[in-house]
Image (cartoon, rainbow, N blue to C red; front, side):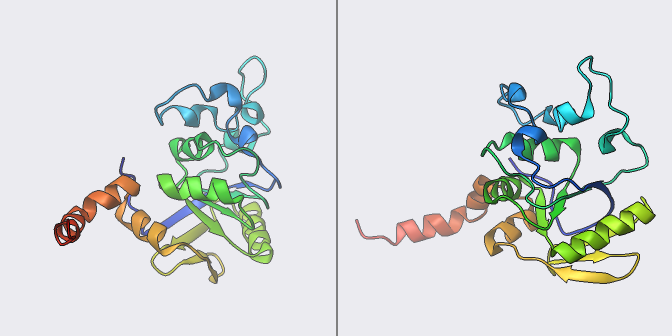
Length: 198
């Protein structure tokens, strides 16, 4: 399944300055029964967003209309815990196209890259600058430039570089998942196979 192509994303951001956010908090286990990658956004951070009677918790950031955007800025060690890929699905289905943190759990990071969510790891210092800028002005925008592998705080012009696997970078720029990539090089695979001795 192809995903949105990712080139340069300029957006305001939703701040979640909580450390050690695990995948069960991102999408509780009771919502993992579905097999299609749809509808999970409704239950993103379900237990933090809603009371037991399903009324929204007004003090949770996703229920605060002050904050919006396609970028989620999380605290250190975002996506720890179980390996459930549904956590990345929930982030994508809600509408986020990038998550920024000073540290990601490896499996969550990989799951995001597989489905079109860009995990941008920044230094703790730059993370604090982002949180401070959003607190001062919720409309603060970030620019995430995937080809250049940079993230810029547009209000100040401060910028950092981030790392990404070259194969995953190419897939995100083209909107490919692993199957799409194989389809894109199908002729090369066939040509190579034809040259093999039998």
